[in-house]
Length: 459
Image: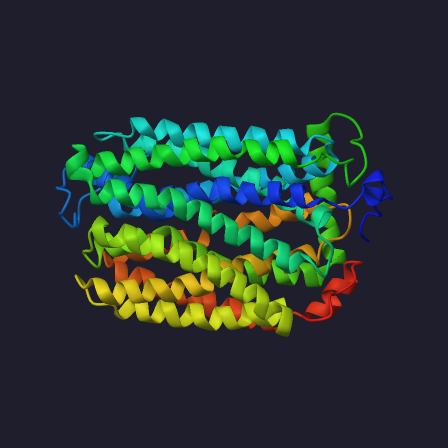
């Protein structure tokens, strides 16, 4: 049986204000710079180029057959970044659920948000020193940044059920995600200008990539101050801690994992989400590597295309949020997975060296990108037993915004075995097909009721 959560003062807390919701939106604005500029655009190709230099390959050399050493294991330079993404998420499996359990028992969630956000931003700024052949330094700093990023998102997500009721949650989540794309896109626009005018600035491509990565850390730290000022700390949703907070967090994590047996439909949804979102996140985080290494496209094509995707994703998130109002979030996510499958199949067939097909495909990604993620977040919030929001979002975040691991692992293995990025990209089709089938099988309305919540009118 699930642990009974006592009524707390949080249940009688006054509803959120518009100012507080705007503050919550702004953390999406702040952290999206890391997702967009660092993970999606610059770090993958740049870290790969540093690894190739360490392997003795030229920047434009496919570097087939050459290897670098990672903790005593020889790997292909092109596999380093996807392996680091995968490793960072493997480590977060042990970190994020504990962070969530602590957050549910802490009266200072804002301070927890600040701690993880500033650690992640500092590690990102530290990538300024990723030069020469220092691929191990880059790998280590990325691990710290991505784990801290995931921990901050767990705390951030846990505010959603406190600031929006069941009927409002799809809209609030979609608006937050849309604003995040504008924030990430705005910084990327500045970095696009630097890419386009790098000659006038006296910089080479590597310098622009490195400074752009650092700018994301500065942006992340600076705009995190807004939610820290406008969000309110509330009484712990799960009641006060029984003993030292961290120890109680570990204890409650064990209870949460055991209680999942009482909510099998919530677990079923979580598995479906883990599968399909792993595919989405892998496409996002490795698209730049695929474009530069397989399609032979330059930053002059790649960066403006990803910028376009960011702004299209703003409208896509709002548009799919509006569609969810008409047909429900569950059905809208299923539609988005069909579109993702189509996008991936087209990506496999893209001709090398031709910019226009890649740009058109980027437009398709922008339309489906934001909505599928925003609606998954709001739908999952309906499946969480009251008082355990952050704990469950700790499990959810294992495969959220940039923290996928199965996809990058499969991508890295496929490339390592075939030395073909096309084989690696098509291998990801499995995640969308299996994820669609699993999500289709979840009885969503019954799952929401089983978690003790009131389902919205449309699902």
